[in-house]
Image (cartoon, rainbow, N blue to C red; front, side, top):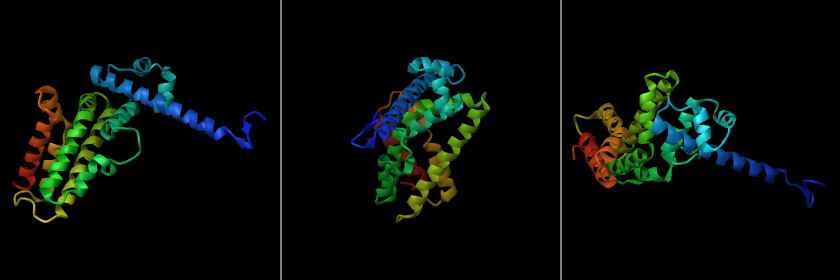
Length: 219
């Protein structure tokens, strides 16, 4: 009987192949969109442009993502995470040094490393969203979400600091500490110092760690 071997249907196998093919197509579209959004800008890039760059039909892009704004959100999510797996940033292996650090200074050193990695992957996408937010309401909402998520990340790290011995600097306080980390975890700093000024990533990471220590610990 067609489609059956040794009494077992081959449909699950064919389904897995289709799913893998669909995933590869989505990845190609996201790569193309990342390049075009960053180099041309959001407004100047159409779904047809992305489809042509990815080597697929425009309906394929629309079926996979639904809208250009949703595609931009996916570009940003993958830039932040490093892949398309549904794993929160805080549970990623590269974030684990923040949880494993044994003292407050080491937490901030590790977080500076996280911010450097995110800047490397996502600074261009962040700038694309920031520029588009002024003219596209659907992107303005995404920008506000980014700001809130960055602040939530800052609060998470401050909470981690408070579980370890040693107080925050007297003039900081919890809210001010969150404010400071929210300021420093902006990928725009990476874009300015590494991409524009030519700093090495290690120089940037060390600079950022010192700034964070000074702002929160006074040391």
